Each structure stands twice: as structure tokens, then as C-alpha cells.
View 1 (cartoon, rainbow, N blue to C red):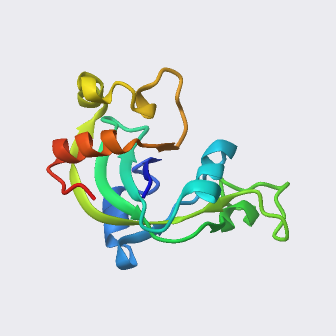
View 2: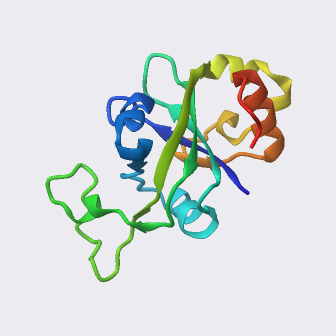
Length: 156
């Protein structure tokens, strides 16, 4: 099993939005970074653990525990000229951008960035590295265990 941290702006898709979606599952649309896309395409598997992270908000942090709920498939927003994620160079027969569905298992308290930074056991967590702006990052099993304990969640 792999573990991931996936960022979402709460104004676009919050943990609450995901929880109210059918089966608490949402398509993770709008990834437009090749490295993040490659994580979805090459490494994510159904059932992998996900830390649902709110970004670009007053208090960024981990707000939910989720899981990867589908194999990767083409992100339809890349073909929609009305979408902010439209990519005129992407073609249906050769899509550039993929997504996976993410199912929220439970909402958590906000484990905010300052608390993550203050924990010495998380100092190597990818999201805490200087200059890291990826929307999807791998999470090492030892980091997952620490974060699970901090959130009072069972370790999967």
C-alpha cells in the first residue's frame, strides 16, 4: 500500500464537499503538473491511503483521511473550453491529464502546517520541504503512522 497527500483548495472541493458527494467520492480534477500526474498514472493504486489537505486557505492543513477509489482515467476538464483546466493541446485520443477518484473515509481536525512543522518525526515529510508546491506528494509509511496518531486515526 502507498500513501499520498493530496491538496485541494476548499473553495473548489473541500473535505465537506467530498463527504456530501455520492459514496463520499470525488474525481480529483485539475492536476496540471506532470510529476503529480505521473504519481496518479504510475504509482497510485485503488485502496492507497490519502491525507486530504486544504491549501490556499486561511489555515492550510490535513483535514481528512481518504483513499484512492479508482484507477486513473482522463480528466474531462482538459477538453472543456469553459473549464479553468482546459488544455487546448490535449486531445481525446491522446489525453495529457489524468485523475483518480478519491473517497473520504472521515473528516479530521485540521492538522495545520505549523503543527506538522513542529513535529521532529515529520521533518522529512515531502510537503514540508522548501519550494515544494506539488498538489500530490508521496507520504512515507512512518510519516503516515505519526500523522494517524496525531489525528487519533487507526493506522491502515
